[in-house]
Amino acid sequence: QVRLVESGGGLVQPGGSLRLSCVASGSIFRFYAMGWHRQAPGKQRELVATTTTGGSTNYADSVKGRFTISRDNAKNTLYLQMNSLKPEDTAVYYCYVMEVPRPPGEYDYWGQGTQVTVSS
Image (tube, rainbow, N blue to C red; front, side, top):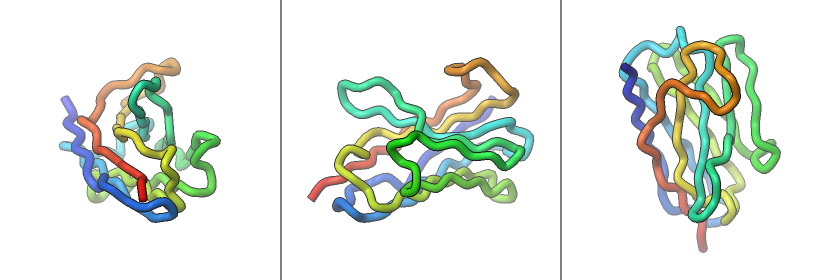
C-alpha cells in the first residue's frame, strides 16, 4: 500500500504561481507513471499532467505551456509547478500513481487532494 500526501495548494491571484507537492510513503522510482488530476465543483475529474519512468510527460491542452510536472525520486516526491494561473484552474488537485501500465482511467493509488483557488 502506498500513501500519497499532497500539499502546496492555496489561494492565489490570477497570473500567480503555485507549486504542488505529492510525497509518497515509499520509493517512487519503480512506479511506471505518476501524475495529477483536478476536479472543479460540478465538473468531472480532468487529467492535468503525467510523467513516466521513461521521462515522457503529457499535459492537458488547457495547461500546456503554463504547468510543469516533475519527479524527484530521491525525495519520493512529485511536483506540479503552476504558472500564469487562471480562475478556471480552480479545483481540487489530486496526485496518482500507476505502478504498471494500465488501461486509460485505471490507477493504483490516489492522494487526498489539495485545494487550489485562483481569484482576485
